[in-house]
Length: 212
Image 1 (cartoon, rainbow, N blue to C red):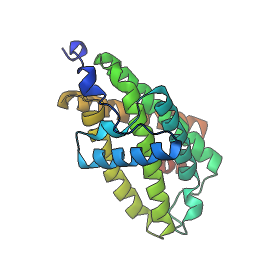
Image 2 (image 1 turned 90 degrees about the vertical axis):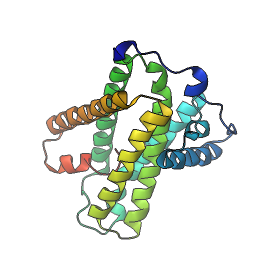
Image 3 (image 1 turned 120 degrees about the vertical axis):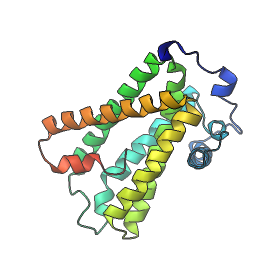
Image 4 (image 1 turned 135 degrees about the vertical axis):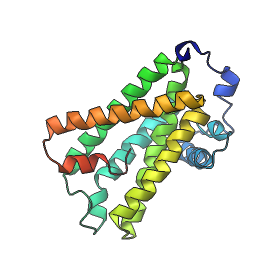
């Protein structure tokens, strides 16, 4: 039944951008408002994101910046509990987990006949990654415990992912559950792949640092 559910009308799926940004900085400010709206559960959140090709490209620039911040996060903190792995390995870990998560997200959206929500999901998720990485870096610079950072970021990420599925992709409750489970399965498979590439128990911890 779910595979044949019709998607929402385009007007509900992609409301007009409130003020179309002309620079990447303006896009970042608008996306920051969007992420804040997603966290708050505001149904107007999609209006802050640019779902055009230009907006998608900008979100990937932000995602790459988030990956770099996440990779160099351990060097920003004096807490020895942060994973002490080379930045290149952490970048590889992040890339593999991202590919697995996005791949399984696309699969479940295709099964639900909701691929129309894939680009909006990518845009919102990419910007979320950037701001979560920025927040993690700030907390690390403040000298907060890595355990505290992981808990705060983990809870925020859970709320954000649920609300992205609900507000941005506009999935129904059962579809949201399927969507999140697919992402968890994707990340789990990604960790298995990482284990094969870098057979080190430390990489499991790296896979749970604040990027995803």
